[in-house]
Length: 559
Image (tube, rainbow, N blue to C red; front, side, top):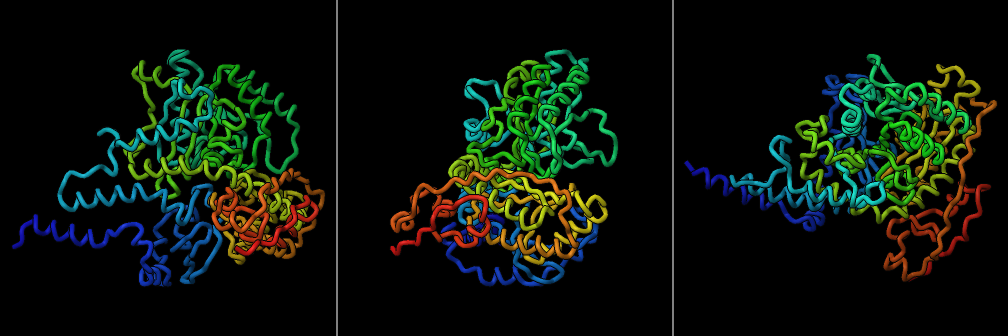
């Protein structure tokens, strides 16, 4: 028999043969692997034993390949190309840009695999929280600090808890803030309630905080008044209602949860900036600590030019959460940061109680998170630019749908709410319209994120090019028109939601040298609209008709 050492040596050599460099691997055609991957030889039979997002036991489309928003799915044995533009803000980059984010961790894991197969000590890929942390943690914290949403962050006593997904991050933030309340007011303090918006979602409703309570009453939370998507409201009146809420509950509430821009519960509705600032200041004046939940709208997706919307709007919350795409859309990672009190917790022998086996333990997630934090700022300008284009697109879709939908959003996080007016006063009829719209969008090959409130969200990867954005919009236009015809929609007393269109026109006109070297930040991100390199100008002009006067289209100069 051969020795174990000899066997290990053979395995290492075989692995070395497979683990070619990134560059070499990228040059390989992968034709056989691709054919096998994209074949129809996949089965959904085992789905009968799976409980996921759809009713338990349902057949679920299998995503077999993707490149940005372009996905290949296998549904009922049939292969189909679709534009997947929902995904709840869970992805940020694609293609070569995603590969660069993953490269450091990929090369790290290659070395780990070599050591594992050789029987050597290997660097950790993960470590239980009781066994220490990885070296990657320090790099992640260093990359996060410059983006925290507070002035003088380098002198603040902030600390971060790392989790796997949004709900746990919210719990971790609440956990730390309530402990600070207990240190200040004593363990017997009444300030242990959490205030959530009357329309809110902070994780799976069965166990997370939020306005929905499908299994049992959540006695540790209370709800406060907020704007409602699709309904008119008076900001002054809302503020008075909130002041009344504080008078009644301020002695019991320790933490107030707020989303600067709602996700699924309000279909991407942004708060009025001045109103949310007033809410936060009034809550803090009553001794309530405020947690800004930016799991969905954070990481620059809001289009305001910084990592956190709280920073852009100078909200100054006591804590903030992040998650979703921080792991590149590949690795689960999230977190909660408190503005101050880290050392105070430590001095009292306290720490976050929301901890578990894999809290901040994945080395590859942390390494990818560092790359995401360092790369996203390069795209802040293009996210804003695409956000301006989204305003044009959704305003046009509202118009051609004859009020069937209302739109709201900013940056690359938008939502469309199906009207509750006219025939839709009957919720059964409205539900049929939503099902019809979903069917027609799927027929056009567009998969947004449909949410329970009755509408859908659009939050594509942030490196989407502007031409693809308008191609998708054209397909959505067809689906909306078809749906309106099929359900005999008539716009009766429909509420008009005004979307302010302030498209920032390109200051740089394209020259052959700019196009050749891609010196423009707009060309770098494939979002330039001054030339025809990335967008069909006639389609863009049709969508913007009557909204604003676009700059003259400049014919590309031959290089």
